Image (tube, one colour):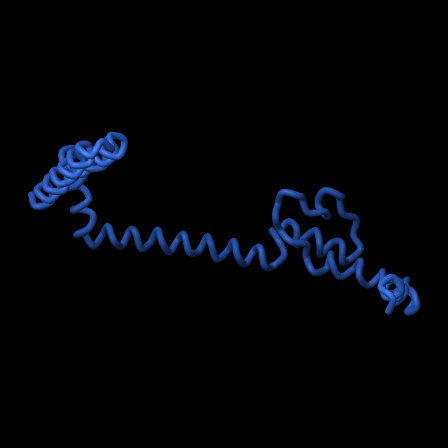
Length: 153
């Protein structure tokens, strides 16, 4: 009963503000204010306010919201760990097979472009080792020397 009275008062005040705004020849703003002010009384008349009051004051409902929040937190945590740990289980198995020298299908070994998962450490470490072993120490500094010569240093 108290919720309906408060909603009625808020709606009446909003309609009064809308009338004052319309008197100032700001009809678009007055219409928008009137629309917002009709929402509380509409909610009260449809019974949504009674439903909301029942939700707020029931401990079992709050327990349900708490369980939903815990489930959401678990989903978010597992997703963050998955992204940090090198992708999905399928991608980790493919990386392990590649590390042991087993034949891996190309689709399973290469991460998809839209997956958003970073390459695993095994996939990124292997090309770096082969690149370092094939390059001589003088070739490593040739690029730097060329840049320095270009800038006159």
